[in-house]
Structure formats: C-alpha cells, structure tokens
Image 1: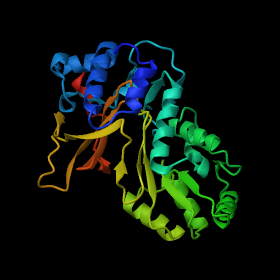
Image 2: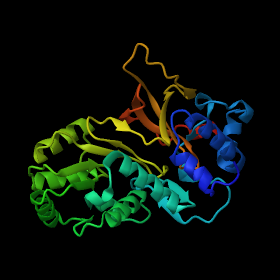
Image 3: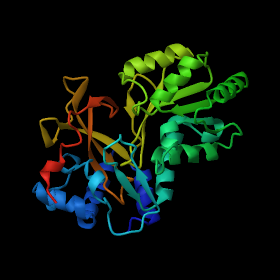
Length: 337
C-alpha cells in the first residue's frame, strides 16, 4: 500500500466491514510504520517487530500525547489544514496535520448520514462559543460544513444569541422541522436554564466540555438536566477529538456507536502496552482504557491510545466513564526523543 491518495484505498476504507477491517488495519499499520517517523520510533522503543503484527490485538497504539509535541504525519506533505485542540490555559494543544480535507469531509458526512440520514432534512444549529472564539477547530469545521450542506435558511452558528436561537427553534417546532442543536455542554446548560421549552422535533447533541466556564458535573447529571428542561427522553452525544478524522455518536444513555471504519479496543490501565482480549462470555461489558482505530487517519496515525476510561460492549458500542489521572504525563515516558 503505497498510494493513499488513490480512490481504491479510500473506497476500501469507507466500504470496510467486520470481515475485512482487520486486514485493512494491519496493512495501514505496516504503511505507517514505514512512513511515519514518530510512530516507527515509538514502535522501536517498545520493541515491536513489524513482521509479527498480523492482528488487531498486536497493533501498537501511539499515546495521544505525541500529538502535542510532534508532527504526526505519514510521509512528508504540506498540510491543507492544522486542527488544534482547545486545551486549557497553560497546557500544550494537540495538533493534527491534515493532508486531505476532502477525506475528513467524506468521513463526517458519511457518518452523519449513517446515524441520522440526509443532512438536507435538518436545520443545523451550532452552539459552540468556546470553539468559535479560536482558530483551528475540527469540530467547527465539521459543523460549518453540515450547516452549509443542510441548505436550510435558519441553519447557522449562534455565539451568545440565546433569544434568537430560541425563536428559531420555536419556529422550527411549529413547522415540524427536524432540527439538530449541537453544542458544547456548558452553553447548552446555560441555554436550557434561560429558555426551557418542550421539544418534539429537535435533537439536542452535546459534544462535552465545560471549558472552565462552569463547574464540572458528570455526564449523567448533565443529561438529566437537559432532558428535564427540554422535556426530552434522550440527549444525544458526539465523541470526537482533534487527533481523529472520524466521530462516534450516541443517541442516548451515553452509549456510543462507531462508523464501520472506526473501532474501539481497550487496554489495561496498569500496562499501557497490553490490549485486552475481547471476551464477553461471562460479562455484559469489559472495562479498560480506550484505544481507537480510525482508518481515515491514514495520513497521520490510525492507532491512538487515548486517556479515556471506558466500557466496551459485545456489539462494539462503548461508553466513556472518565479520564485517567495525570493523563497528560502518562505514555510519553515510554520514549525519550
């Protein structure tokens, strides 16, 4: 696999299934081992023999912290965009060097259609003030593209225009117009407290994060508040990050599902190099730390060890249960460069 720009490789990724996912992931591992300097050096530091990588369980996952200190690129290229994480004051942001924006667009458009249908059926409202206030947000890029693709005259971003957004939602409700309000957690809570209303045709989707604007609360409580204020049975969620080109979605209860080209594995918290074998014979779910395979990350790294604790269910769905302690300093100690 030498040419990841070819339509053939892209088609393989977006048409992958349970039967061919593993082989495609192994092929991408070998490509990235040979073309991604940081990933290869990390593999060598933990004594990986590439010839022995023949299954998902054997693929090494790059600690996500390397996106803060290194240019994670497979081959040399001039990026079309550099997506940057928000972080907090005093922290180093992650950077994702994107070779092909069309690939990112194909990923999020295909995933949205899989989980929600044709975006043209929706009015898309973005409530992402902390993201709009800075440059380089992959989330803002995605939502902006969905807004444009929806073609609805009322679709758009709302910074602090709560009254205007309320009127838009009420008008859409009266017209039985399907509406998706995607927002950062603290802004959704602020809006819900100021303008509670009964919603029937509007999906509330949170993307997580208080961003230092409100006191942190657990997701279950946050969803409970939003459900009460908007008289909804479920709150939806999006699970994505700067370091990924794909997103998982939850339609309720905090249980996420991935598109076919994205997969969650778990690793042991006390051994970051140990991938937990999938064995649900006596368990409803397994617990561990989340590793992500995102095949669309072909130009960066498709195998990322995150700092999220989670549960993995037998059908491949997953739940995020918290963060590892001292997450910013774990993992990088495995390799000094």
